[in-house]
Amino acid sequence: MNILTSKEKRQAVNCLTRCHCEEKMHAVAEYVDRLVCSGCGVAYAPEPLHTVCAKCGKPLLVSYRWEALRERFRPDQLAGQVRSLWRYAALLPVPFAASRTLGEGWTPLLPQPRLGRALGLPKLYVKDESLNPGGSFKARGLAVAVAAAALRGVRHVGVASAGNAAGALALYAARMGLQATIFLPEATPEPAVWECQMAGAEVHRVPGTIAEAGAAFEAYRQEHPDIFSMATLREPYRLEGKKTMGYELFEQLGGRLPDVILYPTGGGTGLIGMWKAFEEMETLGWIGAERPRMVAVQAAGCAPIVRAFHEGQNTAPFWVNAQTIAAGLRVPKALGDFLILRALRESGGTAVAVEDTEMLQAMRRWAQTEGLLAAPEGAATLAALIRLRETGWVHPNETVVLFNTATAHKYPDVLHQALRL
Ligand SMILES: Cc1ncc(COP(=O)(O)O)c(C=O)c1O
Image 1: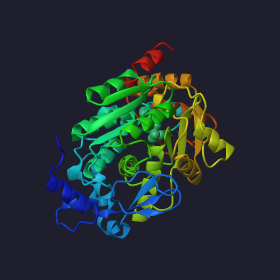
Image 2: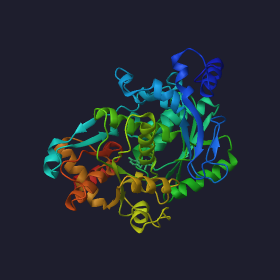
Image 3: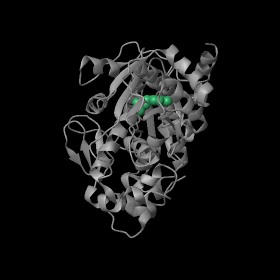
Image 4: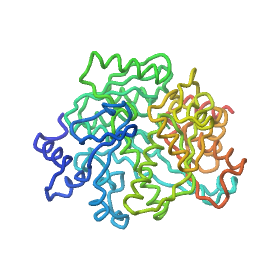
């Protein structure tokens, strides 16, 4: 199945590169300007399809035509827009018409009154990403990135993943009629493996962590060069999908940002994406220089960012022998480590590592107090908040947002463990 006719494809690609057609559905991608290296600042035209910076190997970030956007894209125009992340299509690299959406994004921002009372935080919220297609926030990045790749002629996509990104990739590849090849650590929770297989992806399971799965994927790609890698920050467009979480927070809080955001951090695209969104909002004139304090939450058994943050380092060395029940946090080395650390420091934020038992307790407490079935990664943010309230780092009058990044249903073994506590 071909997702677009060749005429549609030509038209959409033209639009991406500076179209002057009258049709709104195509004009939205007109605002993409160029890609800029996050390491050395070298700029690239948006076409053809890019991976990382050819000069220094660092991730590329999408830059838009801000002058034009400032005039034509304002928060008061968002009311009544589609209830998915495509309400921000003007700030995305893919026209909505070419998206083949599954309804990703525009997840609820839920007040947490009972938990908030117990923690002395009347303005506590959870951004519940479990309601995304496939049950995790990974849908955001892959909805955008798979569409962007398909528009540029890619027919076969692949990734090494802790599980949720693989599932999302498989679903969007199926939706767009692309082939998908996936490499997963052996210990990946079964529902993520089944999700990939259900969607028709070819699945390889590899002993070790995502680091070993990534190495096996790269070796495989040597023999299968038609596979385009969707690995975290190795192409520029997953981040664009993820940044919409930042725009949604702004809209859902009535046109302002929270004081504190706690985010479960593995490869860091969610945190880096939101940080990019806030910078964009300032460029657009939506906000001033104020920023939420960003908190990266990791597992004590795999906390490279937490260690680097507290040691004052600008990059995070590889974490040896990574172990945690939170599969999405079992990321020993992040390509965007310097971007995560920069966002934490510039925001006046911090980094917290929590034990697996604290995640299990938090899963149970969250379900019992607010009816939220959080994944262990999401529960890690609640465990971290409990710590930060104890130390007084978070103040009672502050607006605080926890991120539940996936549904607990994708982790049946962990759910059982939480029940047996
Ligand atoms: C449920 C869940 N939460 C958080 C993360 C970490 O995400 P990020 O790469 O944005 O740091 C992952 C990554 O796999 C995940 O699956």
